[in-house]
Length: 332
Ligand code: CP
Picture 1 (cartoon, rainbow, N blue to C red):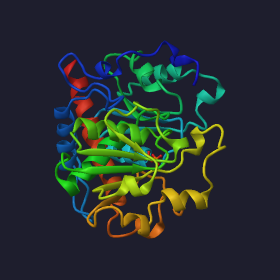
Picture 2 (picture 1 turned 90 degrees about the vertical axis):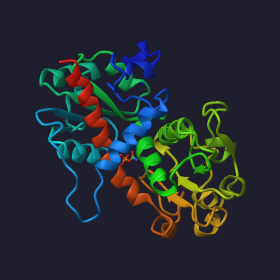
Picture 3 (picture 1 turned 30 degrees about the vertical axis):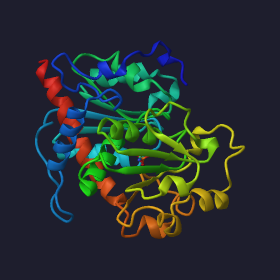
């Protein structure tokens, strides 16, 4: 935890909605209402085109500037925000954090104020410390939006949105679904955000499966069933999502099962997938560690929708960028 965001943060959920009820920042899916979630998913659907066709584009963000500030590694989220901004006609700035002046001790707020002075309208922020996106959102000018692109083990809202969009595309509605998320739940911001979205959308059953050492705190995911065996967790599941072990967020690896033991007991494999429904879909937010949390043949197999998740990521980020830009435009 860096020193800066200690003044944080009551009521992130209200911070992200503007005075007209529009999305101003996207910091968390917690507290966002069902109608708004469905509207964003519907908007994202309109940005999807068939593979091989020219991707959907518009000029909705022409003249706007989007800054990608990733203070943690990323492939998918950063690349998709980059493409999403460009496909909407924005100027996109990808700050190279390894050569940015934060390395020289500049505070995150001074970095933000610097980009504000260059008239960057939307800042997309990934950081290893909890509270950073909301901390920044409290300090920016009224004409600037902040989008959370991954916050410690707390929140990854656009990932949660692209995940529920993918589930909706395959399963239609959520009420009768059993969704099983297996892996390092305790340190996963993806697990938190997708669980929040699924709960708001009325999922039938949400199961979080992990060895006890990687289980979430009791009550931290309201409504979820916390289990520690694949036999119980995957039984007749409609959706199976595998998560990697977030080693970068685990200080002491004592008690974490070794690779072979972990794969045998918690790996999504051809064998363990037989526990789920025959028409279940297999998801993974990436990056994957094949042979640890997921078997390669499953990741590449007929039930896998992992590449579709990636495609949906661009569309969801276009939908979110467009939506917050409308909020910014409304106050000028
Ligand atoms: N799912 C996800 O956040 O991937 P990246 O770390 O590659 O952005």
